[in-house]
Figure 1 (spheres, rainbow, N blue to C red):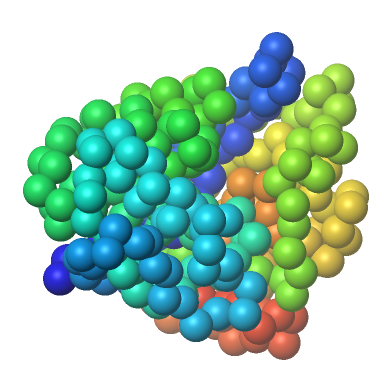
Figure 2: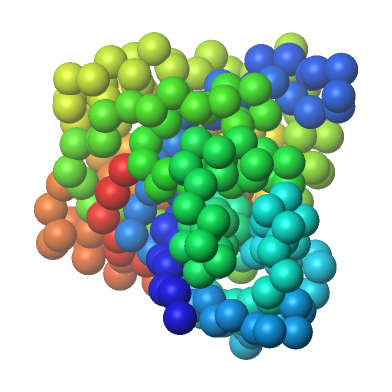
Length: 282
């Protein structure tokens, strides 16, 4: 039996550059990981079946699950005759902009790489992962990276300066295609990617706080006003910086002291059910 943890990701920046010929948007974004984790276990099956064991009303256990897709892709790519039972314990909220499904798929690539004795490189797994999802390549490594293309072209970066992260998800789900579909590239904000890169290179916490940016934030807030309300509540409760992650609806805030994190957490508990205190990993 193999165990893997699947950490959530947050966007420090997300810039949408232009619409590509393949229908996707060309993006440039800086992502890192936080210690809110799903947990997965992998057990070999001799019948060749892929079985997803998950007790969550809104997480599919069939071919729609990204962990299932990852396992099927590895079976086909490496000509594996064995099957696997994947037991999935969810802690990352779903449809949240935190890449929970992508991180589960990445953990599946890593876990089966070991379980099935494939022993391929993370680089090869990352390249394979791009066939089924844009964020999975990043999640394979679980570090901090500048991500380009659809998000699958990675440049690894220094980890962020130490901080507490308060994470809150409103009681709604947001569809990524819906948000990109409503995006007007003529109205996007300027995202300070260069300043964020410099902040990471120098380990400058204050500069990092000033260089967060997400060109999808205003789109999601227009469609879902509760996201803007949540961010305002977070800012008023004393975070050093706050931003929506991915296409939303999750908003996170940075503080440097655990005491501050608890104060912000308490202020947000009345707003939504999913509130967490985490540490930056990256």
